[in-house]
Length: 193
Image (cartoon, rainbow, N blue to C red; front, side):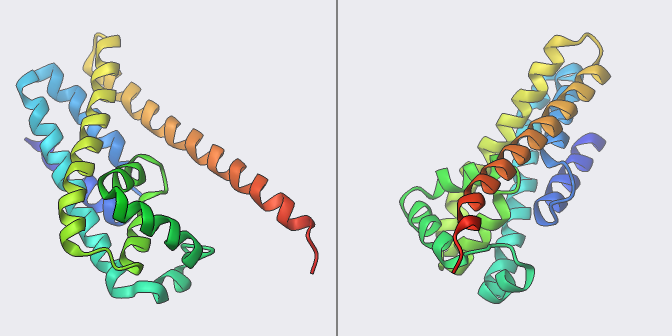
């Protein structure tokens, strides 16, 4: 129960203030749950998904309240309206997919939620779509934890492995995104007015 409460807190707070490793918390808790009681795994997914959902709802509410002014003030989106058009189309066509991808891509969730708020994604669409996105996210990170648990005989080794996998994947994804952005920016740097 204590592990579930800590995981819920880390995920809910980390989904609002993205400084805590939310995926690692779910993976580590899944390892512990699988070791002590395999029946508890669905509870880990449910509690992790609920924490993510609450954090996303708070973030979405903040973004709706702040809107474009918040975007400019925090410099979250370099070209908000061009990006907003692309994300708007994705959010209206496939909101579950857009929200899920934003949850799985490190650093993608806040800009997508902010853009969704700016383009006027309704609360109803957000509420319904984000349930599936958070459930799939929690399931994915629980599976990562279970995979690491199956490799190591001791639960603490599986916890350490799950945390390292999640943090390492986030670092690699961030590095790839920075490289992609620098390649996109290089041709534009050569163009002089």
